Length: 103
Image 1 (cartoon, one colour):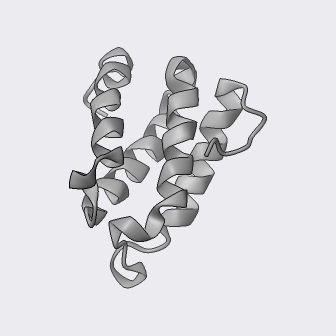
Image 2: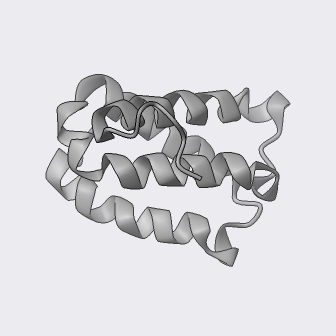
């Protein structure tokens, strides 16, 4: 994407904080967008994500655990839950978390 991997690693912390805040309730767009960005970065910048892999796996687990809070309609967004699980498993692999979601 357009933000380099080092800057992404820095700014993604703000996104993670937002996702965990009350302000993100019913914000289906941020979850859909976040899943797409992580899919892209995992495919194209896998090695660069290793420094923040545990945080990404953790937020993936958080999103799955609190999925209903974000009001992601299957007919609009598709199966974002599966995408988040797949991405979280991918970052677990680079973070040394044995392929398990961190919840």
